[in-house]
Image (tube, rainbow, N blue to C red; front, side):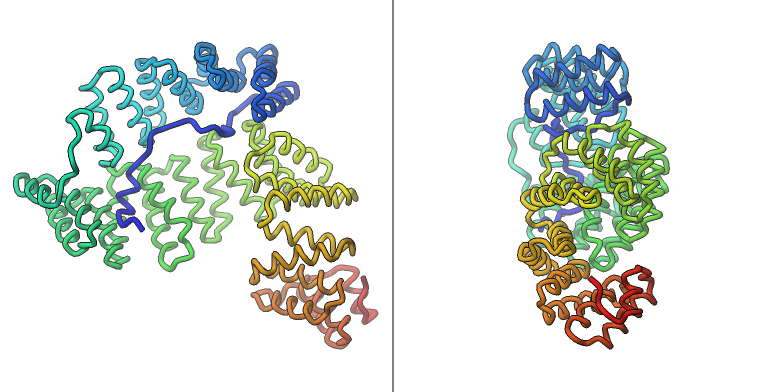
Amino acid sequence: MNKLFFTAILIGACFSVKAQQTPVAVKDSNAVKELFFAGLKEKLTENYVNASSNFSKILIIDPNNDAAHFELANLQLRQNKVLDAEVSIKKALTAQPNNTWYLKLQSEVYKRNGNMEALIQTFDKLIALDPEFENYYFDRANALYISGKVDDSQKAYDLLEQKFGVSKASTSAKQRFKGANAAASGNDLEKLIKDNPDDVKNYLNLSGVLLEKNQNEAALTTLLKAKQIAADNYEVNLALADVYQALKKPDEALTALKLAFGNPEMPLQSKVQILSQMLPRFGKPGVVKNATELGIIILNEHKDDAKVMVLYGDILYQQGNLNGAKEQYLSAIKKSEQLYIAWEKVLGVQTLMGSYEEAIKTGEEALTIYPNQAILYYYQAFALHRNGQNAEAAFELKNALQLEPEDASLKAMILALQAEVLIDQGKLKEADIAFDKAVALAPNNYLTLSNYAYYLALRNHDLPKAEKLAAKAASAMPQNSSILDTYAIVLMKLNRFDEALMHIEKALQNNEGNNPVYLEHYGDVLFLKGDKENAVIQWQKAKAVGNQSDKLNRKINEKKYIK
């Protein structure tokens, strides 16, 4: 594990546009939407000529459609038509001069044609729009160097380090100004401190060397000296947090982090990255409390920052406060509808909460702005399906699959949901085909395996296959009550009642003792094993805790199992 955890967060990498489906806003009209879909589909199959044709047709309908100009520029750049790409991206930016995605693509165009002067101006705009994104500063400094403006480049690197801290990347880049130098040894740094006792940077560098050598107490002593010189220096406090973590002193580490976070000079991006690193560790004691306290500090300092709202929403989500998380995500969207991730997160929470009508409305709004994101169609279809609107759900799933998502897991989720919709529509053969495709794409998605097994068992269809699927899921997730319940049903259908009883009892033991569905299934297994008296007792319990199905009432009244 890297001991320099918090200070390492300050280190960035050079910016590059990834070959992925970028969220792009477009105007909504049937003709434009159909052409846009067709263009995206052709682009995904690398049929750039046909893709360009579709986007060009959009411009005949709407000459100022910035999303079409953007997609054309992207295609032209891929085909090395750099001059055409420059013209197209400029047209997109005419309509939306502050769109960061457009500016990022423009920077790639200028990198390709070597127009460093224009590239520098583009990075100036990106920095103005997002002053906390470290990579823009790095690329701008590099462009200045390539253009021959060595002094300006050196100043740009100095600004980068002043704002985000010294990183390996910035140190390496600055070697060009003074020739390759070996990293300073501990003795060299101690000499520098002796010669310049008020230079905090030297203390920070020495503490880093000591920490890497596991000389944690010596590193702490060095940093405490630095703190006497600059008590509020956020880099000193971040370094102290690293040392206290190494010394297994979590309270002191949190105190140091709070001091760093409370310093307005600490870059917001660095704060966000540190908190983001904490989110996956919410299962560990103390992390939730610490992250919440740090999140409140950021939120109070940056009340109007949409990204901060999303981050705090993530913290609330990890705590199980879904309502609070939803409100943060909605506030972020209200502040900036161009923040795509907020749309995705709010849809996820709304569907998780069962607020399906709300999710349908949100999905419609999101797809008006981002029609090229398959996950949004999935959420929309999920909400429609759960709301009983299967025809509409099927249409949205078709749209999602037309986009041919590269993520196999996402495509598998879409196909699994499509299978459920097809089952509700009575198209069982097509449903099995969709489930088979989903399992082939994501063989370790155990919830999908379990769902497939469940639907096969309900139909008494291909029970050996259902048993194989359910067994694999139950073996992988032995604490998941839903999966255990499904396996019990499959085993019951196969007349393996002892095994079925064992698994349904396990399902009820996993904090699901009052689950009305599992209790009904428990009664079913008991009845088929011959324990009719206890079967009726379990059915009555199921009814008492909320299971009001007609079939259950018949079981209780007639005191027998009904298929």
